[in-house]
Amino acid sequence: MPSTMQRALRIVDLAARLVPARLRDDWRQEWHGELAAAADAERESPRRAPPPLVRYALGSFSDAFWIRQREVADLDAIDDLRHGWRQLRQHAGFAVTAVGILALSMAASVTAFSVVSQILLRPLPYPNPDRIVTVWERQIATPGKLDVAPGNFIDWRARATSFSQLAAADPYSYDYTGGDRPEVLKALNVTEGFFDVFAVKPLAGRFFRPDEHKKGNHQVVVLSARFWRTHFGADPNIVGTAIPIDNLPYVVVGVAPDDFQPHLLEDAPNDRQIWAAKVMEEYEPRIRVSGYWAVAGRLKDGVSIEQAQAEMDTLSSQIETENPRTNKGVRASVITLREHLVGDVRPAVGLFTAAVFGVLLIACVNVTNLLLARGAARQQELAVRTALGANRWRLVGQLLVETLLLASVASLAALVLAQAAMRGLSTALTHLVSWWSAKRSPTATFTASTRLGSAWSSACPAGCRRPRSSA
Amino acid sequence: MRLTFPTALVLQALLDGRHHGFDIMDATGLPSGTVYPILRRLDAEGILRSRWERETVARKQQRPARRYYELTAGGRAVARDAVTRAQGLAEAGRRLFKPSESEG
Image (cartoon, rainbow over all chains, first blue to last red):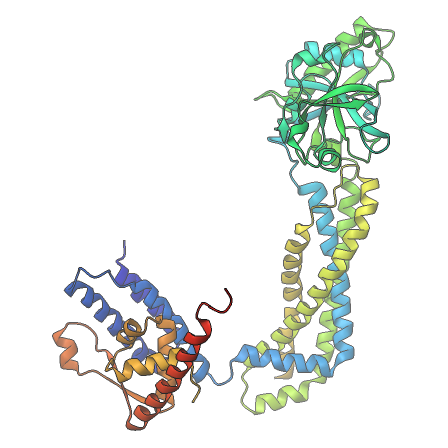
């Protein structure tokens, strides 16, 4: 391990690179001398606290910067920036056109990326989300997804071994009369193990116990986090108290976490406000046609989705043999939760994104052309600068700074535009994609920086080519 | 001359007979990143001059030679003046920043 002294010397040597070559050796020696003297002082009187050599050495950076600033008369970049800004202001027409083109196309691609990342890339808010599947009915000849009939679910649950948990959700609505005026609550009546499928932890209280799925104990509900906040001021003491639902007292046993809205059923763009404990009705095992339940399960460790599908195929055939009248040609499809949520929109989203990035590419080419054209008009200015002693790197640097400035202004404008677009799109998307949530937008900022980078690099060819043609 | 408070501290240290960068840091309590730019500026303005310490001294102590800073004759006057002004400033500060008695 290097000693403190060695580390300090290394820092100083690094800082020395900033110092103009003419002064560098002297400068380095001065710092080395001082550090050595400080280290000696420590050795002579070891009772004193050791001098913070590394911190001393870090100060050499401000010293080096200070010298550099004084010695290198024109700090190139700042100079170029100032010059570039003047150029853009003098040629406002050009600047506005270029910035406009870039800003619009960048805003479009930022928006596209935000949408894509939220729909396709954002992880589902559950532990091991890849293990969560949905199970649907389908007719043997057609690929679609059909809601599940209670009788079939009951058989699946009793016989399937691929799942550590298989649960159903029965869409329902309740009248809530505990507020200022009566309200209809969107709800799911869920069977045993429903929350275990998603492996989430309650915000407060607990989820349902097995005995609460029996008649007599079943008047219990879990609140959604949002409903808990809007109607009960996020009061944790609500757990254990009864609220009036369908004119009966239902005891609140817990509150689901914030992100918990599995959106299993596509009929409901709005979130569920409560979950109630499902009690199997006496007649339900007999219902095998025109289902209306959603079924979700968690795959056992080591069981692949193909294995689960194979098992469900076998099961479906068995059930078909047992119930030839109702289950003729009825099969089960095992589909991952993510596929269930995004499967339908993925091609559309992909196409949309490709189109938008195509537009960005075209815009970049256009702006590059604009820059090249202006480069031709600037031959004279560049010739003068060359005559005054600017070398090629200096000219390229200048042109690069100008294009970067252009791209920076454009990306700022694009950010604002993209924010507005996201706001508009969110409303539309809530109807299109049932589980869309508008609240996550930090990706937009992240993407903006990505886009900034790409705009910069697209502007670079223009910067590099012009001096060559003018030299 | 632009007089910042740290500049005055550095000048006072020089008047007190500190001649090396790190000794001035010790005396003033200022970080190296502050002291050195000030020394460079004072050097450029002719208030102090600098030279390398004698090789023999360095060799005897087995380390690289240190840079030696001292006030020029003109600089000494400027320094005294600057320190006086800074003292006035410090005095005003002491009065102004004192925990106010009138408030209670």
